Image 1 (tube, rainbow, N blue to C red):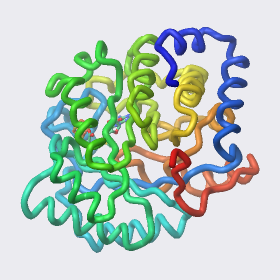
Image 2: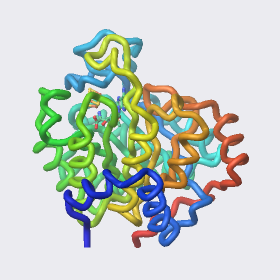
Image 3: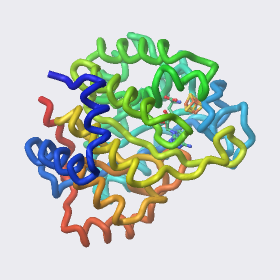
Length: 318
Ligand code: SAM
Ligand code: SF4
């Protein structure tokens, strides 16, 4: 039975130790808490996105460091995927700065990319913007198993962050993805100026998806110069960990990923997040267009914590 918003509000106000202890209890009941999923990501089409997400360096509305790049050659994507696999990645996310996945030849090229990455044995996740039922089906047949489509924040705060689409339309696309049998990856961003109530509402709404998402990426805002959120200070690590813990309690069997912004977190913050139920990290050169920690620093951190990486991608909800 899923938790109510009131339950999450109660959990949030617990003393920190009580909250993370409860989250850890849930976590160790369902997962090997010394093992993490290593994820990789690649932006296969970068920049000049028509949406105006206030956090995003790829929006055409903002002047940022991001150089626009058209859809990558499938063989170049394959080379990156093979390198990621060699570093222990099991789940590979193909992101694109589209509001809607393209039709025609461009989409056929995306399917070729998916087939090539799938042929490496990696779990393929796509994040291409909004998609139709037919496109979802075609992605599934090409070997994509998961579709990432983040709700990002609460319905109340959403219009302050994005005005070129609505929270409702985002939610509707999740239903299309759900109907296609693609697994869902759905998370959000913390530290955009949202309230605690907004954060809890986001986790609550994600946890109400049925079945619950396979993966919940929890991004910490990377404040990008040139975007409307470029001046935001980084989220308080303890607040980030509280939300990790609440997400874990609300979604016991889901993979909870520390996604964007992790490169700004200390080892100690990450260790506490792992204890509280985070069980996936994005490694490699970048997470789409934002930085990730050095691979050697990540491997050193896992070694220091005595933690391992899953050799194969597993979805324990099955
Ligand atoms: N265009 C597609 C879309 O918006 O769904 C996929 C692109 S990418 C996967 C989009 C996600 O990356 C956003 O939903 C957000 O959660 C995350 N993201 C983008 N810019 C970010 C930033 N500056 N800081 C933290 N997370 C960010
Ligand atoms: Fe476009 Fe996605 Fe960036 Fe929003 S988050 S501006 S939809 S690429």
